[in-house]
Length: 320
Image 1 (cartoon, one colour):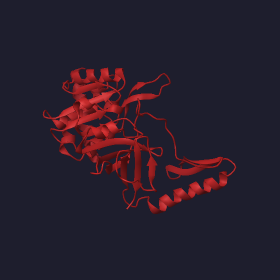
Image 2: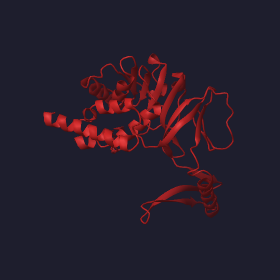
Image 3: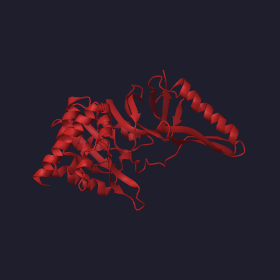
Image 4: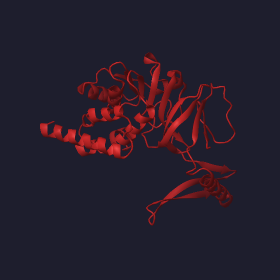
């Protein structure tokens, strides 16, 4: 990289920090300092500088033979949002699930010399690449581990914070076991076909309760915890209905609709539509929901409504 390129990168990085402030993503001095320090472009070799420092631009790192993204560097905006959700402090021990290098470097800047960052990924190529980028940028003290993140990294536990940078369908028991009693997990969790980055903290009863959440999009989790994508479906007998959407050219947004099949298609479609309307009346824009995660090991009875069954437990969504 030439001197001119280095100067251009420094300028673009400062602009990105300013944009993230304006978007309300950066809220703390520690996160601002980390983003202003770590050279994001060096973790995206080959990408144009303008792309590397675009606040809302994710960069695909690896694709499969069909062109599907297997790993990516998330947009700086969502990375910063998750860092702020995590509330990381100097001296903390942090586990990052899903390695790219850049986010781990941000974590290292925030926890400082007294803290410890461990990043884990199941893909050997991604681990090798992340390790090389971290070493070349002076972050060789970060532990880069090749493993199935379903089991966490018990050797470096317990962790004050666990940040998941891949779309997860469930929360494995190992993550809870390796989290300190007053720790926090920030995870892009898929609920009924929609992924939200949720900041969970321990509820004192063996489960987790949300502190904040917001919409996001991530490359799906790989390994033992992976699962296929789906959409909410209402079924009755030989009929089923599912939600769809289409662009509205007049508003510039989208309209939600329902498609149904089977002998009772009309009836089941009407029922689905009424469920959507009830949600809009009773919950939409009426305050934040509370999202709880109840592992199978927790001695907390699961309520009968707002329940989403998972492999290792259940999610309960409720509104005030």
